[in-house]
Image (cartoon, rainbow, N blue to C red; front, side, top):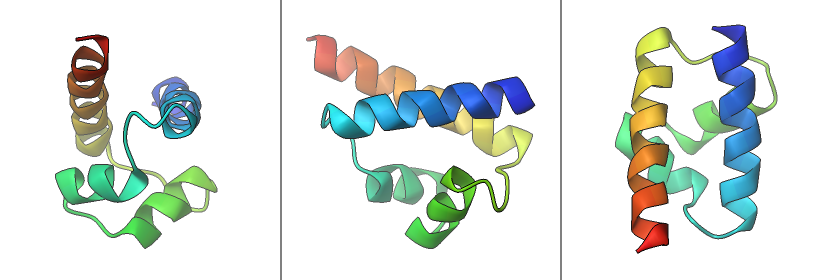
Length: 68
């Protein structure tokens, strides 16, 4: 899970700076607050395995949208 979490953080930084999505959009998709997302990114707390799976789905959907 740690490897998946670190991969997500790297992808998040990349996509955040390339304007593919916003943190608040991902938070809404997951049903969590933007503050929760901030805690995950600052490594104060961690998303569950289920949330990590949902994050992968969200990122995959956004990759498809931006490649079209």
